[in-house]
Image: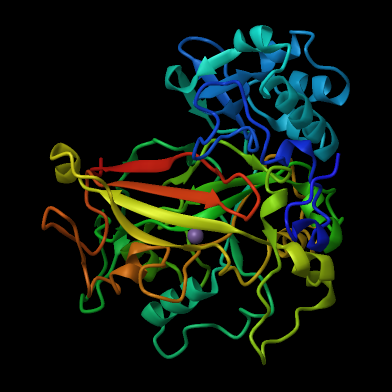
Length: 447
Ligand code: MN
């Protein structure tokens, strides 16, 4: 079955099939019209109920379809059965390592089972777990985590705060900038954000001191999850890069700006970043994203053309995403008074100077071995105008223009008790919108 969703099919080689059909509805109560998880999404995660083993699941509305139970149900066959069986363990790594074919087969069979009028409804109903009864875990065991810096407006904004004369370094438009982060401190949404201690030195201080970071910030990013890797010494050609990607989550790269300012030269971020990274727990698969692929915005006139290993015409035609991002903040006092969270920023994810394929191809371009379950952060995604920046440091002008909260409190940086929440919604004409689910954390006092 071929579905034409307006102009999307003409521009895209991403595969659209019956699972993207906007007319398809689910029999699961609350799934149709669900902000994040209608039947067109079907993201993958790892969950447990109290006392039982973590295992793979698929989100549908406010429910989780248990993949371990589904694999034993005789409701699947072929590659889909193989994928569900591989997802029965405590991480999705084995399943992700199978690549896109089995993942797509599972998506199609699960979509059919969850679709309105599916004759298997009664048997599938018994395999659903309410999300409110489940704890979410990291979707995969993460071997390595790398954070990039592809948000050009963020790079310019932060650069001008740290280096007013020299905001965007000369390499930025030639090479996707990144640094190796820390996998051991990545947590799913909801984990406490313990304020880190660190060494800082104010510009007017004679000597550094050690104590709780005063300038705690967040960074709005996307997380790219690798399904399949590469051998040591091998590369990943850019035209094949997306075949290695399982899908995306939201990612919050919590940052201690006062620690960062003092430590980051000459080797880059270190303790200012590695105390915690929060991800949304559901991987929205590349298959689900097919209707939301967009042309990469053209490079501004005069910008250098990337070297051949970073350039692919097909990637330029569909390497960006039709994704709206938002950040909300609520202080402890706001939650006590029942005041709704304040939206700090909103904007499109189209401000990425490098595409996901360019990020992956670049990472492997020196022969670095990539592995199933590797997580790559895009870097903070900021828009060019006020209200669209992806960090508080940018919004509040490095502390000079604090944000006023509905309680009259002000924030130049995050305070203990603040809850910070990222959200994202894929929207395209003719497609049912889908989202990531929650990516939040509450700041706890330094220990
Ligand atoms: Mn970052």
